[in-house]
Length: 342
Ligand code: ADP
Ligand code: MG
Image (cartoon, rainbow, N blue to C red; front, side):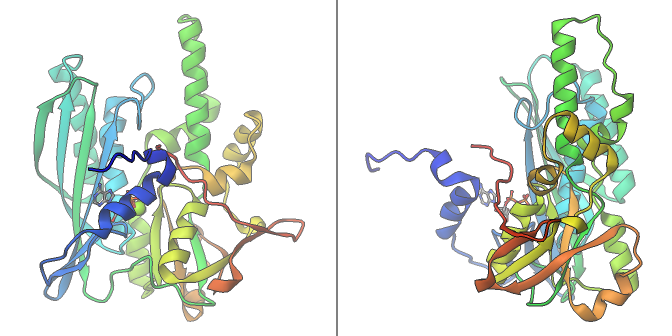
């Protein structure tokens, strides 16, 4: 080993994954796609199988002082289902691994599993295994999800074509704003435990943070309408960061319009209350778990009237770059700040 020491922060999470992935050797023909998309894609005859995994750590990804265990169980599953949806696949099986410190009772773990079972019911999936171990640093939960889709219908980050229409589901920025509310109420409570948190007026945004729902409904609707997106991913790190993934992997540029970006009124108002720019929340807020996808223009009439799919811009040539057209009609270069873990 050389003497050189590089801090992970210098290359970032994506830089690190890229570095580690460079040396991977694929040994099996049925590995159609390994590292680099929302899920790996494996050949399964007429179908392809997709596999994804996510790791959640107490103190990094969740805070149990405001995250109820049942919600956490649901969310740990939902964030993985979101990656299966992002491949245009149907989830079927999950495994769940947990590490527990002695702070947790049997009853607490049962609460967590109530949420996991609720998600299994909601997404029509089977819990088929996992692992359980001790931890010295609180709760760790890791879920692996597997799904499938007819070969040829799977959707990668790399298929966007020039002039495709860029679509985003639901509304964005709510989960980040909800997190600010929860953090503030926690501070208020810590300062004075007699204070009762007033969360009612923030129910939508806190719900976005505490109980995200993967957009399997959209995947089923796209199938019913006969639309296969040209590229897709889920919005876990912020819209701008996800657009950068599409641009990089599809070798294209993007032009999006501020006035087309979907934001909920409560998200907008609460962002202002926190002196945050609502559009920055939409572009860089994490954990919305909506879908970002591109469609061929010929498919537009099929989705045009959908109440929850928003047409936010279009795909351009790579050399044209990545731009946001503001309400005052100036084009500003997009920056992918994303969610920084390091
Ligand atoms: P997502 O946000 O959709 O969950 P990530 O950004 O976490 O995706 O991961 C991007 C890609 O890198 C995925 O294909 C994932 O499987 C892969 N990946 C992440 N961490 C590692 C790792 N430590 N070793 C190998 N592959 C990894
Ligand atoms: Mg993803």
